[in-house]
Image (tube, rainbow, N blue to C red; front, top):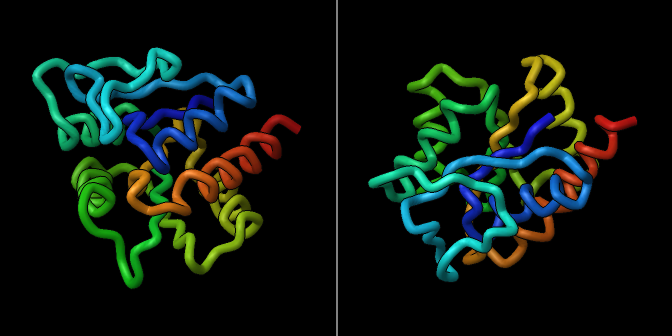
Length: 155
């Protein structure tokens, strides 16, 4: 299993941190200059800069380079912004994705749903996407869910 994301604040970094804490491979693409909401993305995150790109191009490349995408959202009734763009890219690229409504699913239920998605789609490279740190619960929720998924996959 490998976890990839764009290393943006919030969901992206939480997924990478969960993978790094679990000893799972990580990667993904980030915008040129390693830019993020909080400045330059730390070298701690092994993401590659996508030349001459911004957030949109990075998002598309992470969808393309993965076997499937987990999209965590907190926007009732449906995700917007970059999270919505991820869904559009998954559809256009014919890549499987699963929506995780963090307002409705407990950590355990979200973890089970993602594990089923991984098994059903034979995923070895999992892209994780969702809102940035502008959504206060995004980081903690995502890290707990991804840790749970990874712990169950290693057993």
